[in-house]
Length: 482
Image 1 (cartoon, one colour):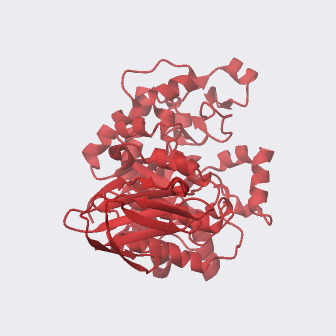
Image 2: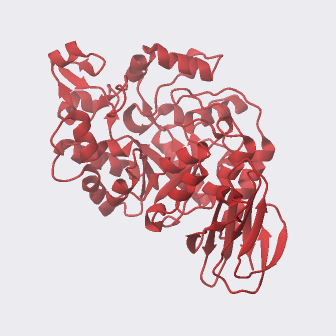
Image 3: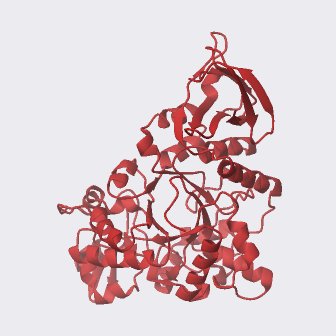
């Protein structure tokens, strides 16, 4: 298995929760080396190119103690898991003590076995990297304090919420510029040449064990954001290009995915990331802002091709708790058929509504929607089987009539593969019926449209007026054209 597809489909798995449930089912501890074949098959349905095993690295007991001191955080645990037990709280996967696989998951040897299982199914492995901070008991804290943002006793006395005293040093707690500091982590210094060297080594070590790396809060390490956060003068060179250039010499095919916010996707794409989170599209979809979605899709295709489209992840609310069922399916069709990468969260297919905090290794039992899960799997398999996202993508305009402007609720695009497949996708992203004419720059002759999800077949003789469509509320057509 070489290289990455241009438009990868990634399935995110909460490693601690997943292994915990497998252990409960088999009544014995299950590590990554002992996952049954059926369980690997379940998380790699047809159409999935990569599995992101979220949170495999060694977690910090010290960080957990600091986090537990915050009553609000404990309340969030209880809200997600009313029958919370002490053993359900294993610490944050983003409070990394060391970049070795946690013993509970079987260590690095078990991860290698997991990667081989995925590769045997033609699926790549994605792991996390947290560039902005580490756990307070990370070896660097005592061995290399120069890698961190540090203060003095006056800083600590004035604002202990922002500073942490460890040994003879005062370290800044990790944070971003818009929120209070995270209580359980220590802030790395993005402008330190020594940190950049150490970060490059760390990133290369992760790349040796996987095929892709999801970089947590990647925008925090850009010169502009870091300078604003910490009031520091930026060096001439940016953090990410410096360490990514070194990575490419050793791991040319490793795909880097940036968690990105604040409209910094383009900046991070330019700094070397293969893909960046598309938070703007997510916000517009879950707020049911059809005009906003359409405007977003007018962006340059080169930019869109490097975006990660998603509807939920470990940080966002569950889709089934955010949108009504029909609206959620319509949004899923949008995400599944656009350019760029797509990210799907384990439990999303089954309609889970509770998103457990990442500190927890157990989630509540919920009724699972097996029909919805079958629909999702059919959607991803159909996109793959019919080469729906192959070739060139074009956003299509819709037209209505003076007395019927419902076409404004429709989103439409086409995929055309030279000498190959041709597809049209139309989604009514509203709770009212909608009709439109969609102009297609095709030869004016009879065409056959087959709805790949619904099974209907339509024979239409295209004219200058285009293709007429009529869709129920939240309805959609995913059409193969012949």
